[in-house]
Length: 342
Image (cartoon, rainbow, N blue to C red):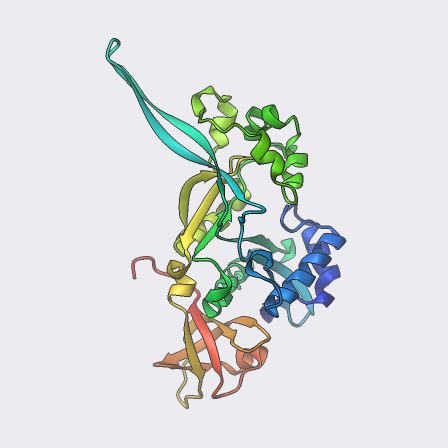
């Protein structure tokens, strides 16, 4: 099978809706109207027609032989502005010591914060259940490929990247953290509040407590899930950690899910990405694997067999054809596997 990662197109609408319906992602719901608007916004973003704070880039994986969309990933160029700030709880430690009793405690506290000049945010990572556990590692491909676009066009993004990871939820999809905290201040059930927050943020700022909240006062079930990652999200967490992301001691104000972040320039697919000229070597070995992206207007990425020599790269014919690149053209390439010690 052959797979290509590319920018979303209007013709992908029906397949992308079907894919999204397999899951329950708030930033990519299985709703034809919402996804249609996201596709239109993405096409305008790739064309450079929207300001940064409105730009949203949607990438898809296509099974080229079957001509079907089997995965997606998303980049919000800027999450957090004066009009719609990014909200989160920062976790701090506070020491308390009693001279009379000779004992002390280190307490964790939550402090509600707003970011009016927010980072780039990634999300929307989906892989069709029928295509999981394939040797091509499609989840990893679609996750990493968006960083190649960011490496090519750094001016379109912020110098920090954020990822909000999903925490453990109950079998009914409730958040123990929300039940213990958010519901008491808003009166809203979790799903309704989380959905509302996608388009309206004012109620968060108005109703959430501005003072520090001591974690020891929360229900033990809520404390247990705070900053934790749900089982289904752990592969995404491990992938992010392997390319330079780390836990920020920040959590989502709704479900207590952890926020991971990194400096854009230090994310390994960007840090080790480079522009190369396509060449042909008579003795090409194609022993190396790399993510290769086009630098033309139509953005495509393939996990290709390559032979890199200096500033040139020979790409195995099958993948060169997939990408539609010729000898002498420029591509952008990044490794597929990383050794954090290198």
